Length: 351
Ligand code: SF4
Image (tube, rainbow, N blue to C red; front, side, top):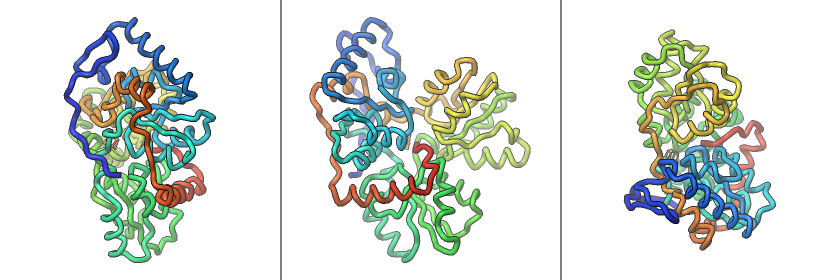
């Protein structure tokens, strides 16, 4: 299902607290925050529910969850858990992926309006038309796609295994790679293949992390390490500047969100500049409190992710509203594409 939404403007409340945007800010009254978290935890326990939160969620949502991670890791946790209900604090395609991998469980998203500008760049009809122009091509879909698009694809990929997935396709077979053009460019560069056609989709948040943001941040922090998500508009520039010597190559890393966390745990750098959605900083800072993690673009906040507010989290647990459904035939085809990826090994992490 394609999701289109408007930015939520209305103030949101949790019991005893009102803020213009509580998902973006920590609740200032620790007692209110603690009471909210306690109610969420109690309701989840009563319903045998597990709460999963994506790395880009607001810190308050991340901190109340049972597990925080990238989209694929969370979906695999959803499939492995004994809980009957999954509360998925992320965007709609992620909750759908959890449902695809756990068809017998109840999957609830706090608001079904939490879409994704990248997933929305291609629907199943557009993909069918593209396939008709390239008969025989293998279709590789990044996990940031709807269930219908996954069902039309041969194999899924994540940002950390996209290169391995492309290399699993015979060299003389054309590839349709979708939907992210920056990840597609990264894969073309890494594999050296010229028969990869890339859909011209982009995530508005990552595309807005620009080469000039990157140069400015590196100029202000010349000794910093640099973590760049491959969906970013600056990833090509980062690699080019690293290869031309403008940036130190040994301190420039193109990483999935899971890869960033692994790197954060072992870094001894004083400062790390991070080019991805700013929610990621919360987990990086927790993983390594001794390092100063800074956003390359502090405005890079996904409004869809931040639609999951504390109030909606409570509402999801109280009412069970916005249960995610995927039509069984579509789920079966989509699951096959995800499982082919997992069979290649190194599933890594999604966004
Ligand atoms: S950050 Fe971009 S790709 Fe991720 S959910 Fe938001 S709009 Fe979609």
